[in-house]
Image (cartoon, rainbow, N blue to C red; front, side, top):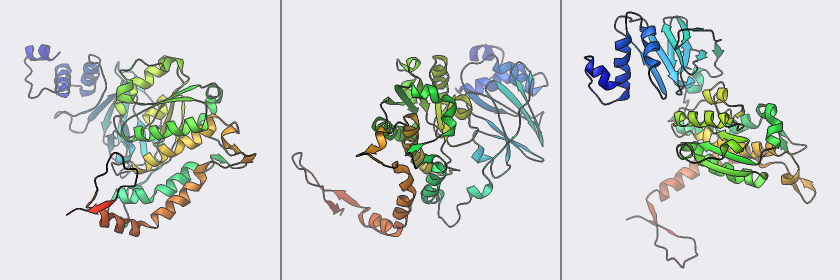
Length: 375
């Protein structure tokens, strides 16, 4: 395609695929930018999320997606686009989610959506549950510390209405539509990236402790090239974090194509994974600005206690000595608050040992290593 464009007189300044796409749109342009984008995208393969501008259309932005998420923000005199709703919360509380192989034309205060073959699409506006106040760090010096202290409340929100204390089981409304298939499940594959992968490793331990499921935890990038038994298992669960969303899309669709029951654990209501999976659970972590995804990790690691109880509501995992024991999750928020109340002491200890190093340990030694101050 690039060679063909060069032969037609196009001059390239980089080696990127993005520039090839820009020239392809230029070649298709005949005065209508939206039509040019539609025509160009019918010739390409793979995933993309693009925004296109043209000097002859200063009040117009054309956006399109396949695989990569794009959400439109609807204002009174403006239209916006982003890959995540958190980027729009300070500007509007009205959003529209773009689907795969769709193109949107944005103009001040108005928008339209169409398919690549120029069929008009009507889609309702969704009200955001978050406001600009959620993006205010308050008295905290940075968002990461703010989000660390928001963890107890986030866990409480995740638990609210989901625990049946009398029976010591969890009730997750998002899974009710697939209860029968869950009851037949024998194999769980947790597919995730980045922060979510580490939560998935913990989740494997929890599921194996509370259920009789065979559990695997896979990096999405590795799982994509592995010879998978996903088609023979009724349950694949993509865990959602901000990192590398595009890696999950082919996996999610391939798992569905092979007949797997695909579930999602996601934070953002109406997110791409939430709309593509058969069913799932919202973590309700709230907005996160810090790149460490503190609350999302905590809740991704916390939800398996609930999911395990919901997936196998028999009393076996919770009956010990004839006494029903409540699941661990309900105690966690207060335990977290107790730790955070000691933040000053923890900070002092961190400063004291920040330059410490572990003294040498022989292979035969079984004692706890001691700390010595670095010179």
